[in-house]
Every structure is written in structure tokens, then in C-alpha cells.
Image (cartoon, helix red, strand yellow):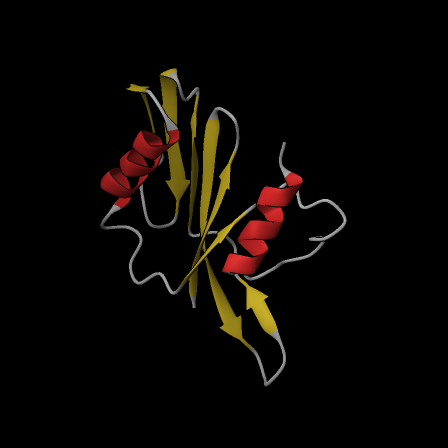
Length: 118
């Protein structure tokens, strides 16, 4: 299974593409990232960097006004490298005491996260 993991911060987006392999009936192994990178400096002159097995290491500077544009840049620049993604994960830092481990995001969980934000 191919998983795209996103970590969106206040002025950056980090991403990693990994393959998860089933080993037996109850064990999963995460292989080293086949591709990873970041867009840093969102809101102005941003750096876009990517490296990995599936792409040549590259670095560029571009104007990125917001996170939506940053994600569009990631998907546009790497469209041919992602292959079939079967799951997407996103790191949520402010889970309080309620969300302390990996959690499937449902409407209920999303509402709970909203309750924790100020």
C-alpha cells in the first residue's frame, strides 16, 4: 500500500511517500520513503525541495502565497512520481489529551479537533 503523509505547519508543508507492506496477518512494515520533500516559506519566497528514489533531487525558489497553492505545486511538480496512492495521512499536533495516537479522521474527530482550537 502506498501512503502519502503530509505535515502542514504554519509556513511549510512537508511530505513523504512510503510503501507499507503486509508481513503475515498482523504485521505491517513501512519501507524507507521513496520520495520526500518540503515547501518552506509559504506566504512569500518559498523553497521547494524534493529527493528520493522516484525523482532526481531538486530545489527551486518560487512565490507561494498560501498552503493551497503550496499543495497544488507539490501535486503539479510530482504528478508522475506518486503512482497509485491508497491512503493519505496528515499530522495534527493539537490533539490535546483526546487524540494521542494515530486516528482515522471522521466528522466526529474533525469536530473534536475544532473544539480544541482557539
